[in-house]
Length: 249
Image (tube, rainbow, N blue to C red; front, side, top):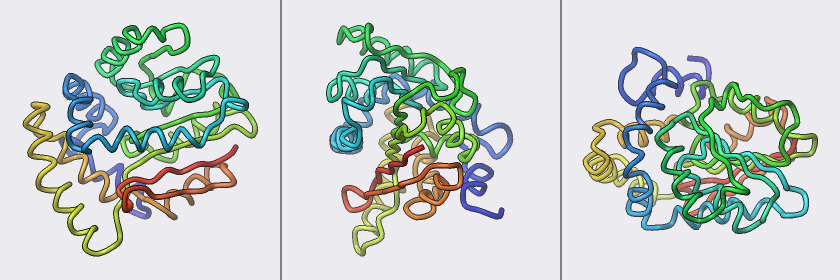
């Protein structure tokens, strides 16, 4: 175990230490898809909507006309991108077919299918050509990559030169006593509610564990730099519960 992202990949999986993390993450999100949006609103007290909105504020409607949303889930970020920027095209990609199915229902209900398309795909092996997108977004998804560095390198590949990446991810608060309160809620309360409601006994335990080992703040910025991004910036939100990272190809 030579680095933090390797530690995450080898030790933190939803169900078992045996088998592929990628396969287990896919199974987990297929299982919790029916309750995913409901639990996001309840467990975050609705703050997750604000986080997504602020993350998308880092893009602009002039430069970012074709956007890829990786780990799109049920398309909350894709819908927010359309609301703020009105781009020409948004593609949402996710490894879970069930999450995509629920996302498509939301897209159709909002009459956004002309702008937003969703598809099942692997973030570490995307079908898109080099330099296909003006911007790439990922919200609460990079923790779940089977290989963090490979997934980020793939994002770098599909971005055009001077394209922008915006990544929103959970982080660990550092300030006493908020750090302790956050850890208690995330470790003891959130999993009980999340696992029972989603009917998956492991999903929200995995959430806590994956956040604990994720290389946040300066460590994550260093990985972005390693795969080729520049002008990297990060800003923590809500006492450090989550952080938005940006970089330029």
